[in-house]
Length: 397
Length: 104
Image 1 (cartoon, each protein chain N blue to C red):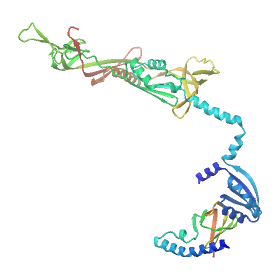
Image 2 (image 1 turned 180 degrees about the vertical axis):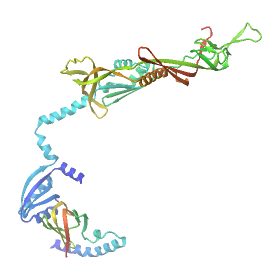
Image 3 (image 1 turned 90 degrees about the vertical axis):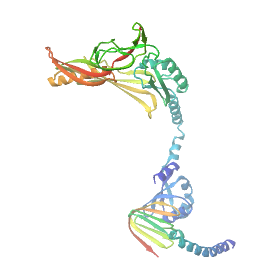
Image 4 (image 1 turned 180 degrees about the horizontal axis):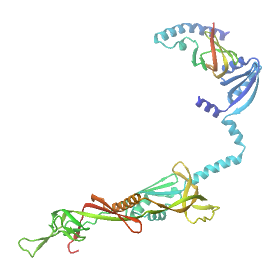
């Protein structure tokens, strides 16, 4: 039914008022002449309202004359009438065309460059390099040769393992994969020692090649020789054989971190007073609209950027920036001893975990608290780990 | 008149053809409205009535509609009835239908 209604709307139809005494005959004749009628509503004894297509209406005249009915249009509906109404409005047509062209032109530029996947590489380096290669907001998207840009990027930034550039709508999506730096390896045929990378107590030592210099239970300091690549000749003690030492040295290591927490916390609280500034973004320029000076002593700034986009990928170069300045005031809050301890411990714990390498195995975690005279609580977190502390070092190097 | 003669000969021809058609239709168990030239009435509740294979409408008022078919006149009474759609094959009546009377 919906489809039929839509079809009728597209074709256009009229609602007519038929008046006469042979209305049934009128309907029958219409049917006989293949004129499609619908929504026939009797108004009174001698009149009815009905809908008929434009084409059908033109064929009604002779039937109306034969059945002596008077036909009058009450409403015109459908697309043909709408088009007809706008046919004479030239400016409207021009405006519509200009709008379409403008939309097309605006969507053929790049307005957003999105970079994802970076971790250690500075984004600025990437954006600068991309900019120099012609990938930046405001350039024609057809002018970007992605293959060339990819090649150039790979050649100029060595930390990249892979880079992919796709132009989607008005967005350029750049995804990068960073190369993991390979550890500096000493070639197998170059003699070397294994030394301690950090302080610790040896737990196990297994030398696959070379001579063990320490025993389990020994305390070693950073840089101490663990497995020597120098093997003395049994027959002639003055001569030694040099080998590339290989082995595993597991040792207990400790990591310690402290954190002080004051039992009186200073927190910022919003007073509720808000100043709002609006800016318009047009192309790549930012236009401030009636900016007021913010005379708050202390405030928090919240910036919301709203862009106009068609779908997800067709970002248009217009938008507004809403800056909200929330006035804040400092509020002192006293927390309980338990709370302070917990805060300090979790903070210290987080710090210490950040320092422990991922290969280390955590064996024990201890937390101690100290209460200082100035009212602060100090948490000391000591983590005991077992890890391989051996690193290779060239003999004589 | 040649045209009348033509029609007559056509009718004569159509009769045995109709017989054969009916027999085939019965053998194949085809629906009767297709073969026997009788109207098919479809009602949806009491608000919708579709009459297929009708001949013409005789009377149309808001509370009474009479439709001519090959099996006689079908008289529909109800309230606020409108003809939603009408083509040479079917007529669709919408409104509160109270009764259907078949007058032979």
